[in-house]
Image (cartoon, rainbow, N blue to C red; front, side, top):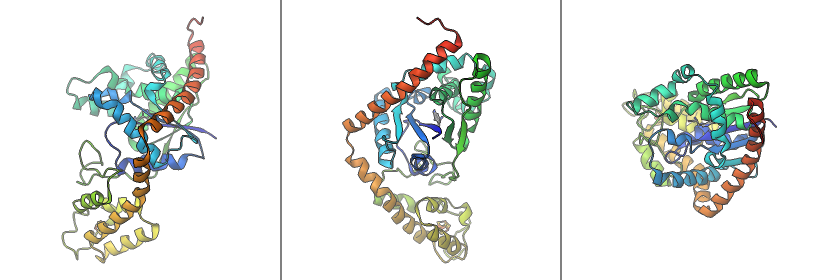
Amino acid sequence: MPRLLSGIQPTGELHIGNYLGAIKNWVLLQGSYETFYCIVDLHAMTTPYEPKEMSQRTLELAKALLACGIDPQQSVFFVQSHVKEHTELAWVLMCLATMGELSRMTQFKEKSSEQKGHATAGLFTYPVLQAADILLYKAELVPVGEDQVQHLEFTRDVCRRFNSRFGQFFPEPKPLLSKTPRIMGLDGQTKMSKSRNNHIPLLAAPEEISSLLKGAYTDPARLRRHDPGHPEICNIFTIHKGFSTQELVSSIESDCRTAGIGCTDCKKILAENMAKSLEPIRERYLRLNDSEVLEVLCAGATKAQSVAKETMKQVREKIGLLLV
Ligand code: TRP
Ligand code: SF4
């Protein structure tokens, strides 16, 4: 099976945008690929964070991912900082990456402008650490969203540069773009995110789901109940596709266009279906205890380390360091 790797930052609680956009797909990919899933805590240090919260966030995220169906029997599931080789390979790649190409990264430009002159070198070299995550395991495929395609292109560039300078070694990783449309926030303004507080938490209780949906933005052209709607531009409709059956989705689509269904009812149905799909995740989450999760992460780190150590042994030799 081809090897696949992806990473997720432990910033804030998971919401249904993360779930539909990435996690659900990660779970499905297990079994068809040799899957490596990494909680990238070192990447979360590239913008200001609260040290007291980091370890708890990492643990909570691990718990949520396990509850979603990441299976440690099928996947190597681990925390980035537990495998020191990530930072070691990042240094090697930093000596191949150019200032120019890193300056062109749109995510850096966006995030550094938010930091108003306090952007760190860590933020600047973020894509290099990401390239190290991928190459360390010689992953061939990387499931990511549209916003990470540039980082993947960068990874492929440094990969080729390494191979041509030191001899063929790393396979060139390819992005595996998921078809999932991006989920907008409940305010309909930007994509769903915890920091903008326009999200539905993945672990929300059924009552919280319905009350959050009640206030959600729909088709702005649909001012009155009898106005025909435009499901293709409605975020609620997009979310329906993630939680409701194909049959229901098609009937909502046509009923919305003819004003056969109102937004209140449409949201009510969605709330029920979301609660139904998310309930098992919530239950598994509540049943998992911290020590169990720590054990899983520890075993995952051991598996990841054995691959990482082997890669770095060969890398050190290739790049010409003195071995003792
Ligand atoms: N930069 C990715 C994101 O923000 C997270 C990430 C870190 C990642 N390392 C990775 C994704 C390696 C895929 C592969 O979504
Ligand atoms: Fe959106 Fe549903 Fe309202 Fe149509 S009926 S505009 S799909 S919320």
